[in-house]
Image (cartoon, rainbow, N blue to C red; front, side, top):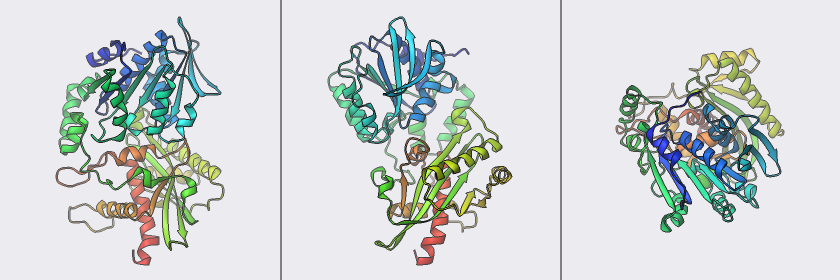
Length: 439
């Protein structure tokens, strides 16, 4: 399959890395930076005298999807069998490639959690690629820098969408900036050859509804998320391990929001009651997520239904002691998904999507659910529980930082698929457990 590169992509791929220890490609969503990064690193792997290399993303699934597969242009396609073979050894999953310069291994791992540092400790690496650098855990980043100290061609490549100017991970790049071994490259939608003039004009018009979105997603600027709807979310406070769950589990349920070109998201949730605090808590345990737009793969609703049934079984295999779910809620607008689930004996209920609530002062009903979710976060009644690498909360965490209001104060209908089903879960939790107690 032929691929056309933009001038920015060509410059990135061909640019020398001599005396560069960290290169950061930062810019808007869909600006073409990841594709350029894949081809740049492919050339480096072939030429490098170092045998082992690493690709880090929030989780291993993302590392594979973004860099190994890369929508058909990833490393596994650049180095097809028998040149490249996906393997597993004591250090983990990797792509082993045969090059004129010897055998190379490109490992790929999750780095969104602190325990990711242990997974790479003791390894000797030539290069490390950081995908969505701003989402990675700082301890893993630090450990990765240590793993390349003895490399013959020491090089780190990072890519990210524009974070807040005060993002803590940016501090870790100052060591390279101060000694002159840092290179920054800025990306905008115009740098992606896939986007034609018509699509670019549509995108600019769409993003113009919010100054924050326009500056971040069109101009590619680092801006403070003043319009972020769930700005009270604190990853250190609201993202917990299973041993931090309070109380005993009294109910479990699933919530789904479906789409084909849009994302389909489903979460497994449990409610607990803690005698010590005399409170109920809502814990989001795991998430199934697939986006036809993001992956380029559109699935039939019957496929989604079967995969959601598999997700149910996965949850009960992982949490065998969890009570059988009382409900499988689905957004009432997703009639096709509900029908397909019924055909395979997964009975569903209509999710509370706030359609029956009164219109709020700004003219939207969903504000009722948004306010409930904000309140649950503020009161410490809502948490995300780390399930491990599979079915984690990556997509919701990504959306939380991008779900904002426009200049008129209305929620922008974008980056909200996992957040919508979170809102539905909170609505059920609020009506059943908080409202009866006067909350």
